[in-house]
Image 1: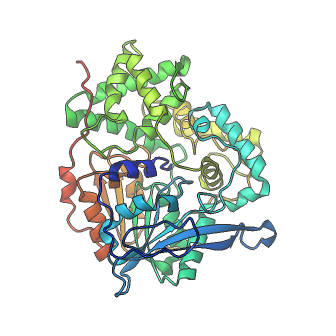
Image 2: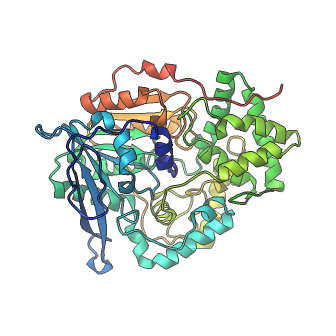
Image 3: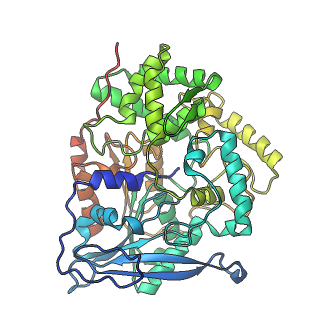
Length: 495
């Protein structure tokens, strides 16, 4: 499940040293003044008016903005049109056209690139329900539930308009307007939830699909694969680096989590927080997974975690404080308002959406107790559940305006699909990626070692080459290059 809120920031960092597409006769881009300029490419921009809620004209409309970056060689038909979505929900794309172009640079001679800001974000009628990104991420669970309730109250009946199905239909309306017969769907993180919904609703307009950091629409509402992936990641980085012992790292995490459940640590810094068990869970499985492998030589939150945990388990919290302060200060790029609306409208819950809040509480607690009586990985069930910003009981007070999108209400198209997972990723772990791949008639699953969320950012070029071959041929070809991706740096733990 989950999103990526740091994909754009990670793309910018990973691609900062990359060579831009070479200019070859720049043209003035047609369209509004926000239309991006991409050297060597004509860019066509526009706005598609869409109903906020289908079949309810009284609810008004949203403006869906797009930028179509034309292929470098225009004297031949396009081999395809790539339509990416970098996650969130809530990450805009048009203002980050340079990063998106660099990520797809190997394909832009003969492929067009269609950037669409999803409704409610960026240049597509952004919504504002008063939520604060840093406050929501680092605040207490009660603060998050109150933020959700306040957001719903501020949006009112308009909240029903912000769903993945509506966004998918927006994308298809833009496709139709531009006369594009089929799209190459490229979903990253939440985009791997959105793009299969597009494929389900508009199968005849799908050429192929790339899903990086994937999770299924019917993911486990307890997030058991995510909790298990935290322990797996600790074992893997310890085994591969020989800088620590995996069993000890997991035991230290369990010890520290239990202590923080009873006595949270106050963490000072640019973004102060109370490091409780649930906040540790947020930072460990979500923040520490992001961008791992983008530069294997540099210290990462995941690589420094075992040493910080071991010291804290022995009573010295200095390194853990520094670790949490750094984790809490990581940059973000999403619209938290849309993030809340889509997650609370779409994602499966442990309670009935038709129930009143007191009954929802009862159903949630019963589901938690029945599904994870012995806890979740190294965490208690309640602690890990409360660490999920878009899961657990975060949406408990969101009104039952819509039914959760039901996965595979129609058959998924029989087109080539490539699913990529980083084997150190606890946000969208291997187990979820394998489940996504199993839902398509023709899918190739690749687990990418020594990478986190998302593996596209690894610098060797292996994954970029696999994606390029796949988009061109429908097959990634040999995948043995992943075996050469080096282990990440891990801070040695005294034995």
